[in-house]
Image (cartoon, rainbow, N blue to C red; front, side, top):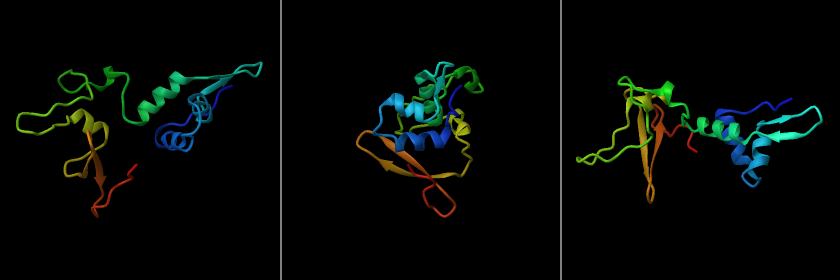
Amino acid sequence: MSGNPLTGKALLQKVKELSDQPRREKARQCGYYTTSKSGDVRVNLTEFYDALLGAQGVILNPDSAKDGRGREPTYRVSVHKNGQIVIGSTYTEEMGLKPGDEFEIKLGYKHIKLNKLNEDGEVVDED
């Protein structure tokens, strides 16, 4: 017997709700466990972590995510000489972004956060 594992936004929301719990308990409550015939519960942390990464858009099997030139996405970018940062089509396609989509830029101490805007200019589903 196993749990009914959460995925995607439901998984991320549940993990936030369980922020005060140990990682094994988070995984168990999110459905990442199996129960033996004798009733012993075994938590599947690897599957839990894989699902968390997947829910955040990180692909662990890059073979299926090569761009048109056969390169694998690296989830790393560098600043060009002109000061621009380019995010490739592999990433924008994976996120379902279309030409003309707009974002609000929020600058942190050592990070940049992009929040997608809807047609009314309001942030869509900010974390």
